[in-house]
Amino acid sequence: MEKATVPSIQLEKLTTGEIPSANYFSYKDNLIGSLLAIFGHLLISIGLNLQKYSHVRLAGTKDPRSYFKTKTWWLGLFLMTSGEVAVFSSYAFAPLSLIVPLSAVSLIASSIIGIIFIKEKWKPKEFLRRYILSFLGCGLAVVGTYLLITFGPNSHEKMIGENIVAHLVSWPFLLYMLIEILVFCFLLYYYKQKNANYLLIILMLVALLGTTTAITVKALAGMIIVSIQGTMQLGYPIFYIMIVCMVATAIAQASFLSQASQLYDSALIASVNYIMSTTLAISAGAVFYVDFRNEDVLHVCMFALGCLIAFMGVFLITRNRKQTKAFEPYVAFNALPGVISMHDNGSTVQPDFGSSFSYGALQSNDSLSEIYTPATLPVVSEEASAAQAYKVLEHNKSE
Image (cartoon, rainbow, N blue to C red; front, side, top):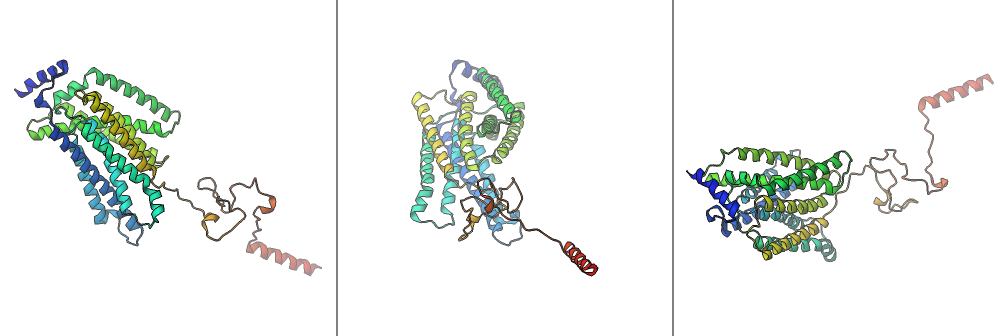
């Protein structure tokens, strides 16, 4: 009897625009979802740093154990898993457009943990010059997060099977998906066939896949929570379709991010990916779940301002991170203190990694005189020297 009344209620809502109060959460549930997302991202950040600390500690000692045999690594894995569960649950309580931008909390926590537990000793002026951007970025990200929670969408509908199917067949979402598929195929063609390995193209592919992942995660989390509350939703085919879409898009995102990390700096990838993925996920939530249908212009503008401030804060946080240097198999003269040479102009004497393996060869001898070119000594083997000496003795006897 309950299933028979649901479609009529949903049809009335979609046609007349009236929102039944029984199908929508209150501000209290919205706040619970925000707190769950913040707490989950904090746990994820702490877990990642604990696992990194475990790897660094084992690398700096003679401990023969593997990283997965340490308690620190398993503690980090437990915190990461708990954080992912908390973030997944938050999608069932708060709108998608509000939960997605809160992933900036993870970057804020990672920056603060890196500053507190840093081992190097810096002078006050050097410390401020190095970390002033990080402190400013954290402040902007906190302000942006506050604006997002305060002026974000305040209500959303329960995730039941009929409701999700009704949104899937709605013409705004079908038009949105058509445009997204066309853009994705166009970018994928240029990336694979034209070898356009630009960062924006790769991360745009990740962001387009991320919109589908965010939609499916919210649908699955909402249906599971509704099932726990007493109305079983796991019997609908749409539930399992969402699981397949979520796993497929998540694996594809990981593949593209792995390719991007091989070409560009990880800090730049983190900031650009956050901005692009958050922007497209908010637009997907506005189209699919109609998150902003009852919001006035002031709340929408303040929410957009909070997003911009959070974007700026994340960019400043990642902008000041140390860039990882590639491994160099040769030693530069300028790296040795007190060594002065004719080529001590800040360049390496040995060739770069990947270009040449001729040890001792200069990078470029075009601008040097022939007198400064490195001389080579003839190498004579023992057999050759012995044979030459024997010939000389025979020549003396003949004479």
